[in-house]
Amino acid sequence: MTLMKHCNWGGCNKVVPKGQSFCDKHEVMNEQRKANYKASLDQRSQTVAGKQVRRDHQAYYNHVRRDPEANTFYHTRQWQNVRDYVYSRDMATCKVCGNAVTDRKIVDHIHPLKVSGEERLSQDNLWTLCYRCHNIKTNLEESIKEQSNGVNKLKHISREWWQKAIKEKII
Image (tube, rainbow, N blue to C red):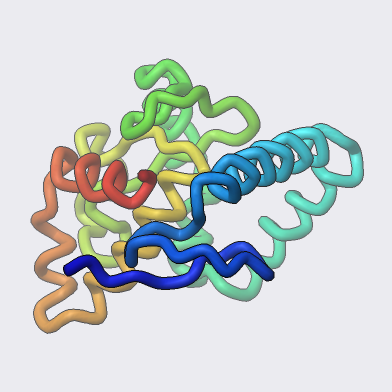
């Protein structure tokens, strides 16, 4: 017997299988709503005000949330040179989903900087990710770090494992 629940669309009383969010009618409407939202974000990020908001957010993150030692490292000439090389090597393409990374160079450490400092400038430990994949990976790293022996696990997770785990979260 399949478990059922109500459609997530406000005011809809149709019943759908558990694990499905919307009835057929509202699934189409939800996809359109997502597309409209993404288009508005893309448009907003191209405006002068949108770019300023992003710069302000990055400055806040660097000043308040990022580890001061990491912040110092990310502002070194050595890091910027390696980052630029990896970004070019990867042809400004996310190595998980294949999207173009055009608005900011997001070069990520496969084994996080905090747990594997000796690999901080290793090109084999770096890859280009888009915002979405980078955010998913960061959240996964945080949840793994909370597990017992999590720091050790993060030191040994392969690029292929990350690709598979991130792709599962995208869908």
